[in-house]
Length: 182
View 1 (cartoon, rainbow, N blue to C red):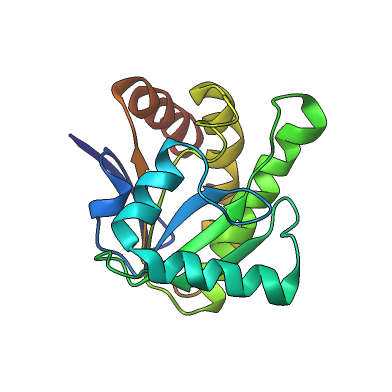
View 2 (view 1 turned 30 degrees about the horizontal axis):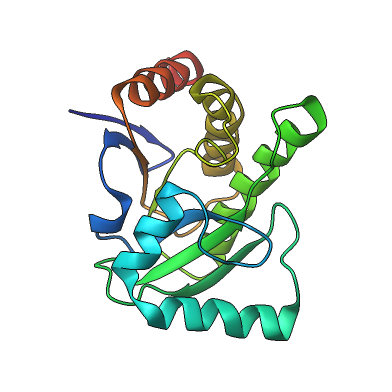
């Protein structure tokens, strides 16, 4: 089951799937400040990508230091079908100041992809897994940010796919998109 809509000539797509098995210019995965394996999704993607990606993450940390919240950095995709990975440090708690960081993290992922000239990206529900944000909070903050970016800033992205883990996420995200685009 795939939900699609078009905003400013960019396809916004939502489906349930495995982020480590999709093929885009880049996929986005949530990260911690050290770019180390943590959380089910990040570990699964890094395992599928192979050791080269973690070596690239280690190199970034050695040269940049800890990655601040809301920041997005890029590595290759290693063994993945997607060419690149955008690692984003999302917020850790669902309290109001931290939740606002979810908008900034989402925006910075889109900005990074756009600046790199990527045409297609796959992204999960940021901060849902290891930081236990509800699907509703993620949709309420991520979807308006994606729509705003597509309308105001996007130059290169032709497809943004929200690759979600389960039916609950899918239903909540699709409902939020319909509320904002209909």
